[in-house]
Structures are given as C-alpha cells and as structure tokens.
Length: 416
Image (cartoon, rainbow, N blue to C red):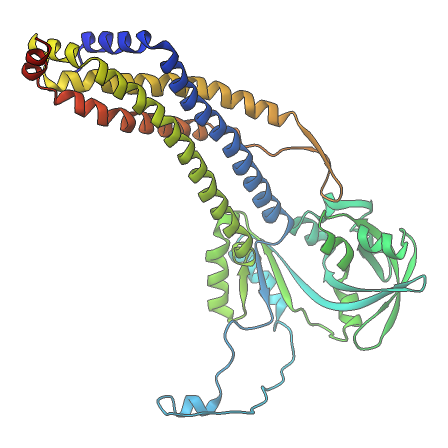
C-alpha cells in the first residue's frame, strides 16, 4: 500500500544529495534522448527505403522458370532405388510464359491488381562509335507507370511516347551520358540474334540507382519481341497489389496454381531487408548499454543513501515502519529519478530530432536536395520511457531490498 509519508521521505533523501541526483537524472535523460534521436533516424531510413522498394518495383513477379528442376523419368519409375544418373542434358524448351495474356486477365480479375507482361533481354546500344550492354524491357507503357515510379523518374520525354513513336526507346541518364544520347537521337540496338534496329530516344529517366541508370532501357513489348525474335512471348508477368503486405501470400498462391516461379518483393529483397534486423539489434544493444551505465548511477546514489541512513532506517522501523515501507521509500527514489530523467529525455530527444530534420544533404544520383528521413512516431518515446523506468527500478531494487532487511535492534545497540 502506498503511503504519502514514504514519498516525502524519499523526496527528502533526493533533495539532500542534489549533485548526485542531478548526475543520475542526466544519465537517464541523455540515454532516453539519444535513443529517440537514433531510433528516429534508423526507423525513418528503414521506412523510407522500404517505401522506395515497394513503389519502385512490382509487388510480385512471375518468371518463366520453375523453383525446382524437373525430375528425370528414371527417378519417377524407381523412386526408392539406389540410382545414379550422370551426363544427361536437360531437355531444351521454349522460354516464355504460356498464355501470358490470359494469365494477366485472370490476375487482374481475381486479385484486384494491376498486371503486365514483360519480355526482357540483353542488347547492345551503339551510338557515336561507343557500345554499351543494356538490359532491355519490353513493356506496356500505360501499365508500367502504374507498376513502378518510372513516370516520376522521367527527366526528359515521356513513357507514353513509346506508343506513338515507331521503334522508340527510353534510356537512363547513365547510359545517355556515356553515349552522349539525347531525346530525338537515333541509336543502333543490336540484339543477341544479330538483328540491328535503329531506335529513337523518346525519353530519359533517372532512377537514382547507377546500375539501373546505366544498364536498363524500355521499349514496347512488341518491339522487344521483334528484337529477341520471340513473337508472342513474354518471360515475366509483373503485378502490383492494392496491399503490398499480401505479396507473399499472393505469390505463393500463384506459384501453386501455375507452377511458374513467383517472387514477392520481400523475397526479392530478402538479403537487403535482413540488414534492418541487424541494425535494430545494434540500436537496442547500444541503448541498453547506455541505460545500464545510467542505472549504475542510480544504484550508486541509492546504495550510498542506504549506507548513510542505516541509523535513520532503524529509527523508522522502531517507530512502526515495516520492511515494506522501507523498501518502498528507496524504490520511490529510483522511480522518481527514472520519471524525471524520462521527461527531460523526451525533451532532449525531441530537440535532437528537430535539429537532425533541419539538416540538408545533396547526394548526387540519389537526392538533389533532401533531408534525413526521420520517423517522428510516438512509440519511440514509449520505448525510451520503458527503458528508463525499467533500468531505474532494477537499479533501485537491490539497495531497497537491502535496506528493508536492516535489523533496528543491532544498529541502535551498536550506536549506543
């Protein structure tokens, strides 16, 4: 049961040792403040990068391949036999997704999504005596602007010009700078089959990724089919879902239905997303270390008070205070230090976040003029408060428990 007199005694102990109290409070407040600032940066950058991943690429990609290779008939016939088969050349098959147009229609009807067939391949773009190897994508321009952020990335021209221009091509800034290509120029595109087509540059994009800006180009799907000599063939179906978080479920359902390998955006970026887990572990480890150091200050001040006030504790117990009351007095001191440090830490964290948010960066290729992506969510303040209060209570519990076990008779007799 809480007693007001216990709180008054705890407050008197803290105000009597103002310097030590101030140091303990500063330790807690700085730990909370820096946690809020660092967490805002890390969570903000994580959310910013995740949003870019979600918006800049399809949520699900169906590929013209299978997750597991086909089993040879011999192993089907003798499933339980001890067999070894070597030197068998896999059967050649025509690459491409069968009936891709019908599959696109079914996906759009059943998943309430945007789906588009794509044909990819490697070509050589030649202009001004220079050659560059480029990954070419044959797309539907109307759907591509809904599947990705290509429309926002365009700095010259327009994706829709692919539909109105015969043999049009959209290239990245990296490729245009290396070959000195500009909108309206005619570049020679050499396909793997040896076909050479003169294509007109109708747009230039900048994705902010060197590999994409230098190594990717867009053409109409039918033009890609002519270049690759693959009429009526698409090797990918790219899907954008109303809810990106359902991509894993949708990909698994599609793969089970049609057996083609279906990758969600989470699977495609699995290695990259795993880095966020490592970063969060590092963050909370650092914050825990800071709060442990701060809790040592609280432990030190309360332990000192217990040692100095042993006679006072004995007198209080002889006046009728029970062990529970003594424990409560010193626990209240730890809680008070934690609460005060938490409130000051909130103010420090808010100030640091606002200061970081005012800093501008100019990163060539990624941002022209941008600020740090910060997450200003309230949950960071809650986590900081939990860290502060938990460390304060744990630090105060040990000396408080020790104080509650003081035997007043022995102390008074020894003093006499």
